[in-house]
Image (cartoon, rainbow, N blue to C red; front, side, top):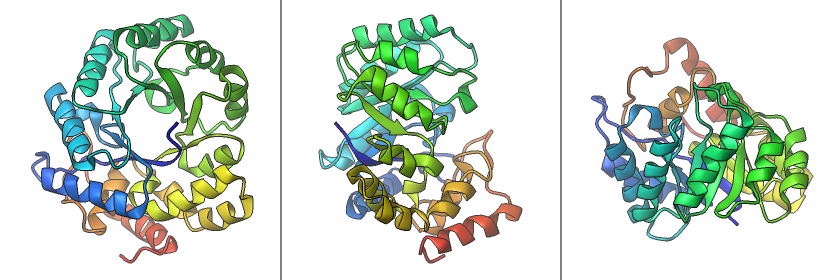
Length: 292
């Protein structure tokens, strides 16, 4: 079971929007050196919605190659089309991903039974560990804990990223899915509390900016060391908030540029962080001990 800080990695691009492979390799080395426990490649923060299928799979393949087995790579392979999700998941396995993160189908608002059958079809089609991803604030679709519990009994479905920020769900999912099932927070602001309640880590946006601190905070929470976790998390509260001052990944990409790790590139319809938000993000970085 993967535990700890799982960074939802940004996808580096140049100012024209072209993919930047040199910066991707630099990012991988940065995170391994800083103690990040695993990487999510081409999730929401990785701008999966603006990439075509070939680009999507090329980034996963390159990330796997750059990591070279040092930490797990989890590929984002979700879609609102079951057929497309199966195709992406199959290609992720082919290029060597360790697991897949599969978001609930967005926009078309399936029923709970539709969600169950969607994930069941993917589970039966590809033999790779699969992590469910529930983020109703983006998808307009809420996968209820009872559905997660049903899905946890299927082969290949090994965990869930629960991004509602509703901490009561951590306990409910644990009771329904059992100790073998991984639960990851998808909400940085409540990830410490989630891990103290029994979650196995966080798939984190903040980890792009302060990877060592996020890793140490989450591992303290997983150990049950509430005092240390709180002390470390107090330095991160600004980032947890300000990295969402505009739509993710707009603020986090600005911040990673300030770290000198990537160039100033983002794809439409996303736009660059506006000047009225720069001060808040910079101050949050400084609060976390990052020089900008």
